Length: 80
Image 1 (cartoon, rainbow, N blue to C red):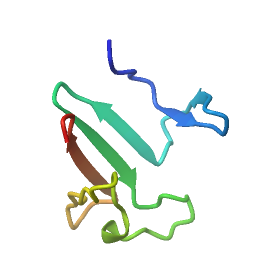
Image 2 (cartoon, rainbow, N blue to C red; image 1 turned 30 degrees about the vertical axis):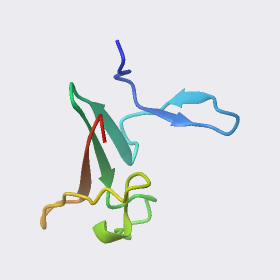
Image 3 (cartoon, rainbow, N blue to C red; image 1 turned 30 degrees about the horizontal axis):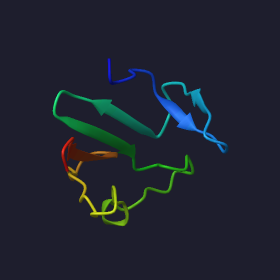
Image 4 (cartoon, rainbow, N blue to C red; image 1 turned 90 degrees about the vertical axis):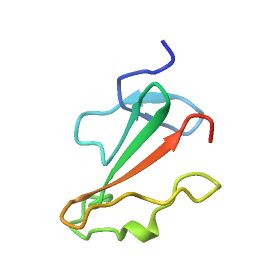
């Protein structure tokens, strides 16, 4: 399989470590796209980040956000 269902952090030196379900960033690999979900309480401080302050990739993929949610989602096609 191309996708690993376990959330991981990339550590200095290029090694990875699994993260519990409390991770502020989750990536779901689908057949034709990636869905990245970011908690607006990204740093765990209670201060919410603004969706417009977040980007994905060098092309500046814009977030898809709903007004009454505490998460920001990005949808990126695998061939983009």
